[in-house]
Image (tube, rainbow, N blue to C red; front, side):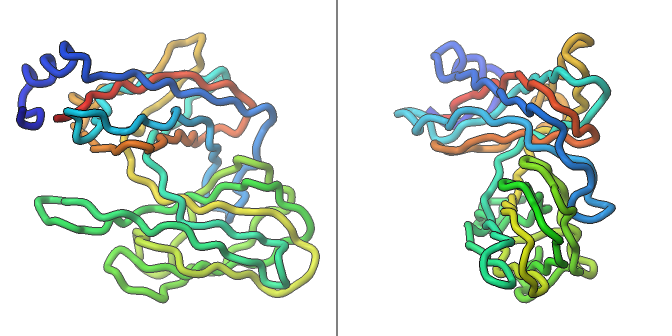
Length: 262
C-alpha cells in the first residue's frame, strides 16, 4: 500500500486501525522562574510529555500527528509548543571550576524541500533540571550554526541565581545566526560556589497554539488545516510541550491524535 496521498487514504488508514491517541500530561507544583537566562529569553516552562511512541508496527513507516488539543489549569493566555525535542547535551554548573558539559545528540537529518540528508537547524531551549544556587557566572555556548559552520559562540549570559526546575528559555545565538545543528561545548567563568544543571533542547516543531484556561476551553490545533505541518515521527520518539507567557503552577492535560503512515 503506498503512503497516504489523499483524504480517502487517511480515512482508510484510520478505518484499518492504523491510528493512536497519545495523552499529554504534566504538572508543575510551584511557580517557575521568569527570564532565568537573560532578559530576552522569555517566560517558559516544560509542562508535559507524551508517553514514548511504540515501535513502528508492521505496515507503518512513520507516525504523523493530525490534531492536538491541550488545556491547563492556570489563568491567562499562553502559547504552547508541541515538538519533538532533541537532547543536545547538559551542563553541570557546579562540576569543576568552569562546569562540565556532557554532549548529547546533534540535530537529525531529513529530506527537506526534496533535498535528502539535510540537517535540521533549530532554536535552542535551555531547561533547568537541577535548581540553580550560589552566585552564577557567565556561560558561553559553542555550537555549529544553521550553515554547518562550527566554532560559533553565543554572547556570554548569566543564569538567574535560584532558577527553579523546569524553568525554560531560549538561548540567544551569536551574530546573525538563527539556528543550531549541534552544541559542541559549554563553559562558564571560573569560580567556586555556583551549582545547578541545565539541559539544552533542539526542537522540531509540530504545533504552536494559544492555550487558555481549562474552565474557558481547550485549545485545539488541526494540523491538516492550519499550516499543514505534518511531521513524520519514529518509534521511541517522545513529544514534549513547552509553555510560554506564564510561569505559575499548573496542571496540563491534552491529547495528540496520530496516524500511522504506510
